[in-house]
Amino acid sequence: MKNSLGLPTIPAFTLPPLVARLGARLPQWPHSVNLALALNAARKLGVLPEDTLQELEGRRFRVTVLDTGVVVDFTYSAGAFRPIFIVANEPDLHFTACLSAFLQMVSRQEDPDTLFFNRSLSVEGDTELGLRVKNMLDALEWPRLSWQGLRPTFLKH
Amino acid sequence: MAKPQLVCPAGSLAALKAAVDNGADDVYLGFRNDTNARNFAGLNFDEKSLAEGIRYAHQRGRKVLAAINTYAQAGRFADWTRSVDKAAELGIDAVIIADPAVLDYATKTHPDMRRHLSVQASATSYEAINFCREKFGIQRAVLPRVLTLAQVENVIRHTEVEIEVFGFGSLCVMNEGRCWLSSYATGESPNTVGACSPAKFVKWEKKPDEMDVRLNGILIDRYGNDENAGYPTICKGRFEVEGETYYAMEEPASLNVLEMLPEIIRIGVSAIKVEGRQRSPTYVAQVTRNLRQALDAAVAAPDAFSVKPAWAAELGKVSEGSQITLGAYNRPWR
Image 1 (cartoon, rainbow over the protein chains, first blue to last red):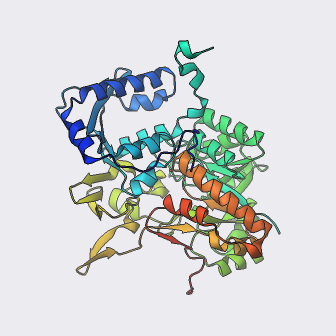
Image 2 (tube, rainbow over the protein chains, first blue to last red):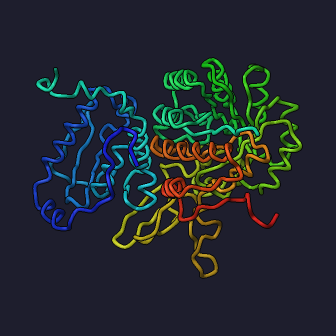
Image 3 (cartoon, rainbow over the protein chains, first blue to last red):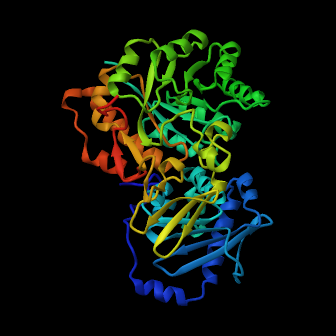
């Protein structure tokens, strides 16, 4: 089955437990920085709707990738996504899944409710905030993105 | 033999485009307020996205229907009439309405705009449907999911109103337009705020061996790690009744009418509706694509029709609950 973005099909897989054991021992802050950078890039491209972003102000998010051992904490404040380096409190919203489920969801191969029903994805914390984020991601119009424009300059002819 | 229209859901512009691109004849949607029964955070259409959605669908010869299908709350009638006016102004193809007062307003103010009777109006008899035809000039009625196929056929035989039935999607107790179960726990329900089990009352709690879901503090269900989850509605919860814990009202289930498509076409159903405005564009694309293929095959050769395993597999995967049922359409009792 193909996903709607024309990306290669992502099978359901779970990485070997060793990956998670190693991953969990590595520092997590680089992942938080990377994700915050990526989200800010999407925000600057105008992909993320401003009105929904305002609803995220001051809220703390965590994404746990079970089979890589990666835990990413970040927040949205004063108009930008920011990594959280020292996690003092429980997040307002926590998504947990294996890498393949996250990839299937982001590539629009699988529906988030389907992944939730079959227990591949779990959502804890503020359910309304979770629904808002889910609906924001669902509403994104990826095909309108100019992939051409995202290519590094030296690849353009 | 008339070919039923395939009516697909959209909670966003991306979902509308997915429906159109995958073969929907009609797309139905709601405004970003409580005048529709899927009033969830971040879902639905503002004026700009609706205008763009209508343009996208019309360019491709498809229709857009606006569900303004909750009941107007006392003192706020103008919110519902504003939605009707906005739909007319943007050039919507039809409005789907349940409240008689809102229907009356639409009939008098926009007589040329098609009016469909929403499932939320809970009209199950041809007498009720013909009454709405006479009073409000409705051109189509969406039947509640409680009738057998024989009963649907009987309704169709006694009315000139087009009949739309549900073909796919999550089921609930189907006390449509009259259900207050959500209000029992939260004080809010589709009839009052446009949402069943509003998300602000829902709490999922993951524990090592199970996952609990609570609605305003009331334990609705407790899932083992190998059990599928469902939407956190009271009707689909498991409760302790006289010492036994089980689905006291009904088991989470999804409707799928693929195998009876030739029958549905034969009895003269005008439109087949897919549930799920709260779902993603991915779901809309998957369901629309498979139903389009199945419907075309059933119209082309009804006698030779059989359900392809690929359709059943993809539709089964996106379903809520572990069952795929024919709902009330084939129940033996009346």
